[in-house]
Image (cartoon, rainbow, N blue to C red; front, side):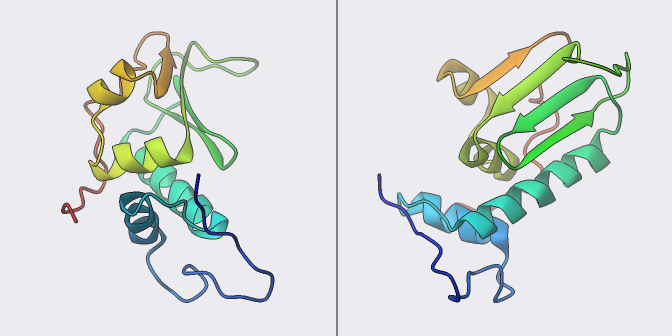
Length: 133
């Protein structure tokens, strides 16, 4: 598995003001892993867009190790595991959020673990469709 590592003192795409979502999508399209800072920033930005699009506390969306947010109005949970959860890798989340991957395809391939009522996010995605490269 190829990847781009971050060298201390070397600027990352995010540090240079390059769009972290586009940086990640480009890396994935090349079969590479983006630098950690770009991937983390892209996930944080996209999960916050998801929260803005579907505010609430009834579904927890987890993108380890970068983000966990609660969305969708409904049953509010306060402690422990919420009644509905969605979990996937950063790459899968970014691809879902940009339209490079559909919810149905991700579920079918086992790339998304979704449980509980209202855990189907297909109506909320993509968040920021990007043209194919």
